[in-house]
Image (cartoon, rainbow, N blue to C red):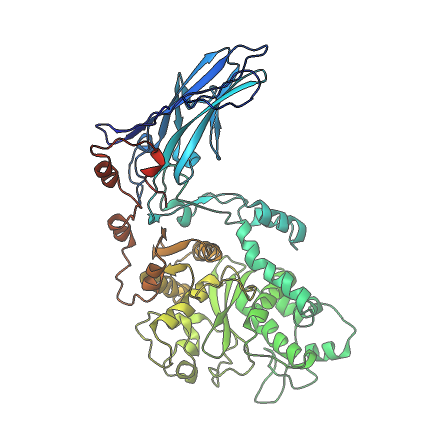
Length: 561
C-alpha cells in the first residue's frame, strides 16, 4: 500500500507526496493493494494522472505588510500518461486547467483565496472520451484566528434589486455614487487581492437603502402618521381637520414661525415659505410644528416622545419630497435615557452642511423663553448645556467621552458606550426586527473606546469642523453590516480618519473591548501582531515531525481558523 510522506524542507515549507490512481475505460471500481483502481480498457487507451503537493503555503499573517503572495500559495505537480484529452485540478472553490496562467508545465499554483480554511484536498482529473482518472493531494491553509480586515467594494445584487423595484427616486444609485470604490473604510488598509480570508465586502451606495427603506416600511405600517402626513403637504386634502391644522384656526400643540405663544396665536403652515426654504433649518421651522400639530389632531395619542424612530424618516421624506431648492436630509433616532430624540443632517441649497437635534415633543424640557428647542443646531442644544434642565434630566449619547460630561444618570461606562455606539450604528438603519441584533447591544461587534469617543466628538462638533458627513455615514454602514454578521467577532478601532477593522476568535475579547475604559485595546494593531492565535504553529509541526514518519497527513496539519 502506498504511503503519504510528510517532509520538512530547509525553507520550512511542508511537502506531501500523494499516491497515483489510475482509471481506464468504464469506471468499474475494484480493490487493489497498491491503492490504485483499474478497469479493463474498452475502446480507449489507458490513462492515468498523478498529483503531488510540492509546497504548502506558509501561515498567513494577521496584518498584511509588504509580504510576498508567493509565500502563501500552494503548489502541486501534475503528471499524466496515456492519451489524455483534458486535465484539471480542482477543489470546492476553483477548477484550474492547463490554459490558466496558474498552470506552468507540470506545476499548478493555487492562490490563498482559492483555498478553504484548514486541511483540504485537491483533485486532479484526467479524461479521454468516457474514461476518467483521478488522484488527490492534500493542502493546508493556515489562517490566524485574529486578523486585520480588508474592507473591499462589492456590488450587492439583492439590495440593488430591491432598490430597482421599490425606490421612490429615479436614478437612486447614480445619485449616491453608483458604485463606490474609494472611501476611507476601503482605502486605509489594503491586502493582496488573492488572500481571500480577510476580506469584508460592502456596497456602500446600495447600503443606503437600509436607511432609506425605513420610510417605505413605516408608510405602509403606520400610514396616518407617516405617508398621509407627507402627502398632505402642499395639497388641498378636502379634509377640514387637516386644513384646520394648516391654517392654525385652533391653538396648536406647536407654534408656526408666523405665530406667537405669548399672544396665543398659533400662526399657519405657509407652504410657499416651506417649499422655498434654502436651508434644512428653515424647512424644519415649518414642517416640524406641522408634524406635532398633525399628531395631536389626527392620532389618538398625539406626539409621543419615544416615537423618534417614526418622526425621523417622516421629517426627512417631508422635506426632500416637498421642497424645491435641492435640500438633502438624513435623519435618524437617538435613544436618551427615557426620552427619544434624533439627529438631522442637512445639506443646504448653497452646499453648506449642518447637524441638528430633533425633538419628539412640542414642549421639550430644554426649551427656553427665547428658543423652543425643537431642532436646534447641535451646539445650541440644552442637552449639551450644563446649565439647562435637560442636561441634568437626560443623559445624551453625544456626551460620551466629553470633558464637560457630568454623572447625571445611573448609567455605567459600558451602558453609556453602548448608547453612543447605537447612535453611530442607527445612522445606517433604524428599524430592526425584534429578534435581529442591534448596534450597541452585547453581541459580536466591539468598537474600541478611542474610536467611539472620536466618532461622537465629530458629531458633537460637526458644525464647527470640516468633517465630511458621508465619511461618517459610510463607517456607520460598515458597523451596521458587521453587527448583522453574528457568526463573526469584529473589533472596530482607529479613528474616523483612519477606521480599521479586525476579526477575533475569542468571544470574551469582545466583552473586554466593550468594557475597556482605560484604552488598553485602542492600539489593536499591536494586539493582532502579538496574538495571531494560530491553532497550530509551524514550530509545533516541526517538533511533532522530528524522527517520525507519518502515514496519515490529516493527523498533522495546521488547523485553519
